[in-house]
Amino acid sequence: MTKISTRIAFALIAALALSSCGNTIRGMGKDASNTVDATQDAANDVAN
Image (cartoon, rainbow, N blue to C red; front, side, top):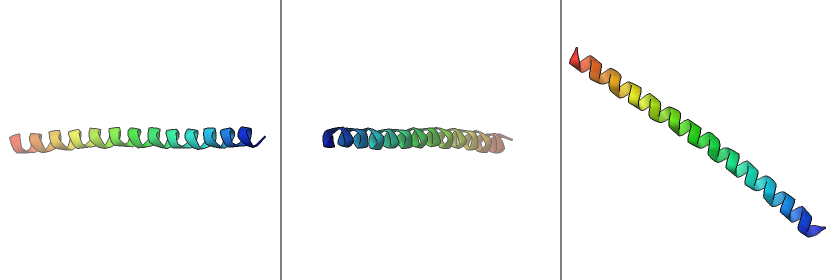
């Protein structure tokens, strides 16, 4: 019974860790997109 409990606990911890990574990667994508937009806006301001 202890081995089953340990495996269930490990699976839950792994699922939590993987979901956290997914949110982090999604946030990094948004940050990169915002950086590109800001750079393009700055370049347009300099050009005009």
